[in-house]
Length: 227
Image 1 (spheres, rainbow, N blue to C red):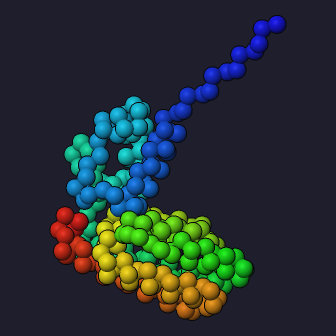
Image 2 (tube, rainbow, N blue to C red):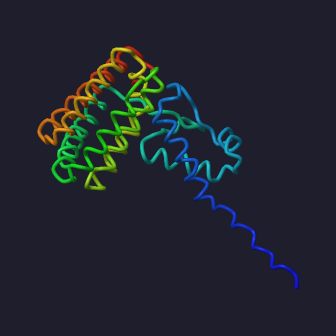
Image 3 (cartoon, one colour):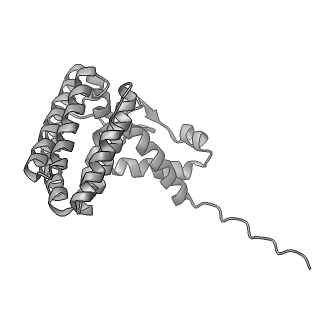
């Protein structure tokens, strides 16, 4: 009796391929690895990912919809923000993130918060350089947001994070800003460790203020980031 031949695996649909491309580019944008004048073209990305232009086009349009990219003639580039646009964005964030942090303290079991704090402190130990800190900071922040009780608030915060990540990560390549960010992150972890909702909320507010001030400095000093 001849052996049955296993069916060939189904080819990935363009939507699946587009999702993969979106995930890779979203992570890279969050790490701030691209220069402000970078351009993404369908041809270059289709060659990079080994796919046709259809899923690449879909991925680029999805990233544009989410505010991570903007169309520039026949390509896509990073958005540029004015000081007012950034102020408006941080105004929204200041009404979301501190509340989300407060609710984490109020709703989560103490042992779950303690486990997060212990893990986060380990991640933030012995950071050798800016790139390593950016990755560690991103991991710690992402894990904290996953503790948020409300998925709608969490998704909104993550959307704003992704939209400005390429600018924020550039600020963290400066020694003074990185040091302040690390200090404020530990302040937040200390408040979480004490299960102090008021202090955690205040620490989140301080972190946002510092991030906004750092981005404002970058926009003023580096015109290629500003609109």
